[in-house]
Image (cartoon, rainbow, N blue to C red; front, side, top):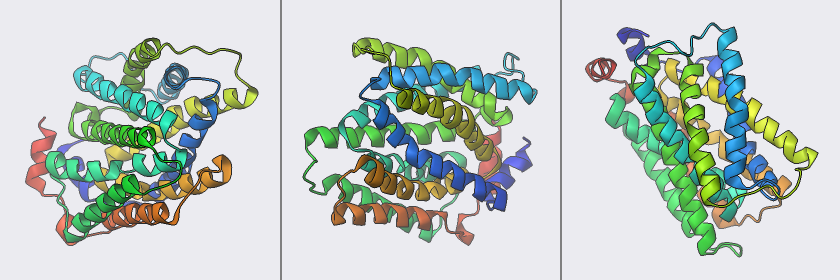
Length: 317
């Protein structure tokens, strides 16, 4: 990717194909937290995340090899790759542990505060300017998150709030990996390489966490749990995460990330029907605020065009 391409990607509107891909990703990710939650009774969280990364790595390698990606070529990206992998591993420690304490319906809302962090980070790191509408959207989303954390519900106690905060921490880590992929040498390599660094680095991190928490699998998992693990490894990590990083290379990080405002809708509705999570009107209002705020962030704004000088400076890092 040349400097001019990097500049164009910051202000480029999402194409019809990119929008279709994002809708598919949002649908998948909205149900992913439900899949994790359904498997938890049979496979503990850290072991589940470790198995997922181990199983996804060959999928990423196969896809990349078929596309001609040279995984072991010396290209000067290993430092940024390991840094992104460290954050990726911490992200899923926080998310999977958080899902032990908080319902999937709450988790999916808090996880998709990631666009809030991406928008702020894009402004600071990538030089992507935000207009008044975008800043209003961030404020509305933040108010929604604050309201959701404070909403009184019959099943909410200190442990649930701890789980909520862990999920928000995971969202912050997800945003950080997106920004690293966009602002370092990783932007020049194939998306399979970017994801490969993260998944490979996450395996020892997640495995160590599983050992520290003393996790074991007491019996052979059911066919449903095995099927959901295959779904997570092959489809969610191996395929949709690769597509995500391909889109991140081509389009504005803040606009792409804000587009995921649709995901909580899928997740909350799915949790209600599949997990039978209890949803109050107050929490529903908080979710609407989060989603509405992210919609405002994604609205086109003349003020939000990225300054060329700032992006030229980014390309020199």
